[in-house]
Length: 90
Image 1 (cartoon, rainbow, N blue to C red):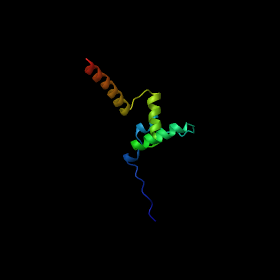
Image 2: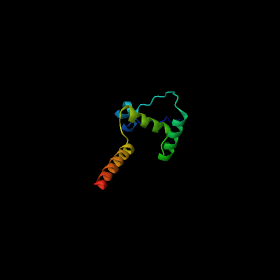
Image 3: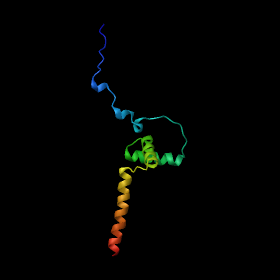
Image 4: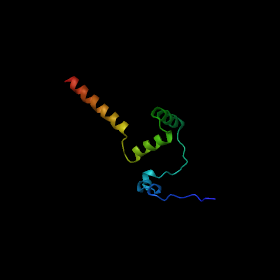
């Protein structure tokens, strides 16, 4: 009977970024309002993401005051509309 060979090459090593705080997941149990969960699931389905990932993204934006690309684009569109309306008014 031949023993399995174990490959200890570089590809088996974990990278340093796998231990970065934003990459470590912790399981928790919490309660949220049903309407919030429904909205998260709806948005997740539209974007092709899992609702848990979307919730984590929104929490990260709020806690660390980070803006997603989508939120940044929405903000830029709003500002552009304001500038355009001022230009049209003058």
